[in-house]
Image (cartoon, rainbow, N blue to C red; front, side):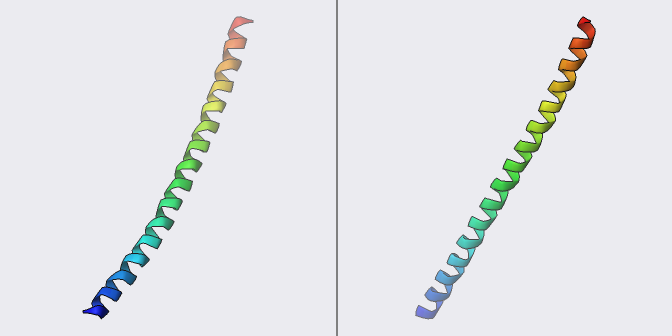
Length: 57
């Protein structure tokens, strides 16, 4: 019985460690996607501003 408990505890620790790694990986992925979206938005804004200046000239 003790052996089963120890095995279960080891498996839970293993799963928790891997869940932490996965959580960190998804957070980094999310941060990267946000940064990329910000770059795309900035480029669109730059193009829009350029077009507006050209229209007003």
